[in-house]
Image (cartoon, rainbow, N blue to C red; front, side, top):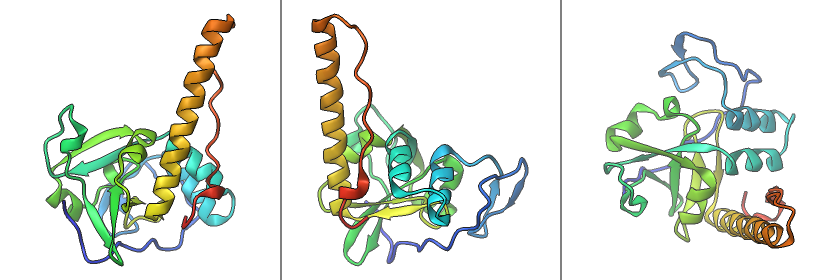
Length: 192
């Protein structure tokens, strides 16, 4: 596992959600290809400007594919990954990114590989006592402390169980329609 002294802080947000087609210097001073913001990034940006709320951000996050940098080659055994961890006042914070172009050079130097995976799957695998930082060093990012990650993982597991039960009941009851997915309510997540 890798760590740094402090988790990078997230600067205040500018209202611009669109990134153009050419390379330019981003808010961290590095060259990054410009592109449209991912749905997760757009939701984070709206939340930071007051146009959206954390429910929308968490909903987008749980349904997003995220990039997890790792120091080990990616195999089918995701338990073998060595993700990048930042230290936040003694709490390890797992670094994840909304897009591969959000991974800064300093992270790429210690983690030569990356895996893209569903965020809902990842939060269920994060060990107790570990927080989460999305897009560290970028304006379109956020942190969730360990208690919040565990609560979100619990909520995701409950949502998946309810969906499975609904699908099983639909199969036995005859409608054949899958159960509608439920939104995760982040208002009950402490320290978020």
